[in-house]
Length: 354
Ligand SMILES: Nc1nc2c(ncn2[C@@H]2O[C@H](COP(=O)(O)OP(=O)(O)OP(=O)(O)O)[C@@H](O)[C@H]2O)c(=O)[nH]1
Image: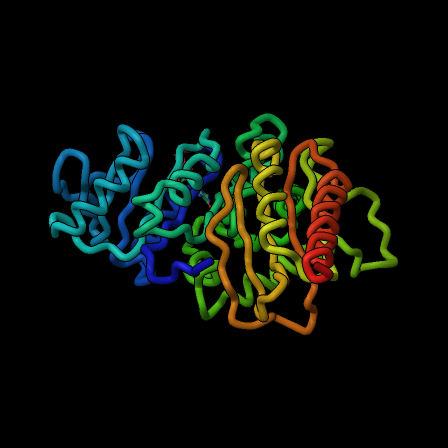
């Protein structure tokens, strides 16, 4: 269990067709926070970057005016990242310190996340940073109704940029925010009305960022407090954590410290059997024999390397896990994890008695 704070962070910019990914990226690349960034765009021709901003290094790689490197992915994402890294190492291209991948509007971002977190060579040098999704305030609800991939894009996001708020009526912006919240209840939503977005709001506080880890975890935990009904007494007319009949977000809390091995087996089994439907899982665990919390963080079939935090964010020592799932009942997950915890407890007691 290690952090990976010395690895090159990879930010993914996802979002439905025309939702403003390239516009956002262009603006971000001019900021100091994005200096020394390499950009991978996974469909050539789709990129809205003006060609006079680009200076060709070779047929696949372009140098942006901002000093950032831009490549188009023609083959496999895995090969493109590995190639970029080896060219960086031999000094063929500048030594970038961040990688941004802009997905196509129709992409399900989960396989891209999976490549970064599971491919062994990539994992050695890169780590996943925040996933940023652009959502078009004018068309958000239409896209969410009709395009399942736009739901996935919001579910996996760590930050949402709500674009075109200058074009949408306030009522529409509010409804778009509500729709986002029903999928990913605590994701920070930053409004962009055809203007710049503060890069710190998007980049900082990712789960590996030592300085800000606590804030990110607090955000997750707000989701669990919300789910427990800390805003008790105000019955909801409808479930605000439910996007539709199929996709829901909920949190589970466990009072007793958890056995790490049992939890690992349980999670592996869950993801093997239902990984497609576990859109997002993130949590803070109190692990038996470990003084500080362990943070887990996964998207569909993949779980990132667990991260050890230096301290608990507050006095609450319970394990808390937030899920965004499709077609899985809260009780199903709660019951199976409780059964695993109980089994691990029984085994411990037997071992102690022996
Ligand atoms: N008024 C307004 N227009 C915007 C905003 N964000 C993006 N646009 C415009 O929306 C159009 C699409 O923006 P892009 O940045 O190309 O969107 P994209 O998500 O990269 O599009 P695809 O690559 O086709 O999926 C462009 O004409 C942008 O100028 C915004 O906040 N306000």
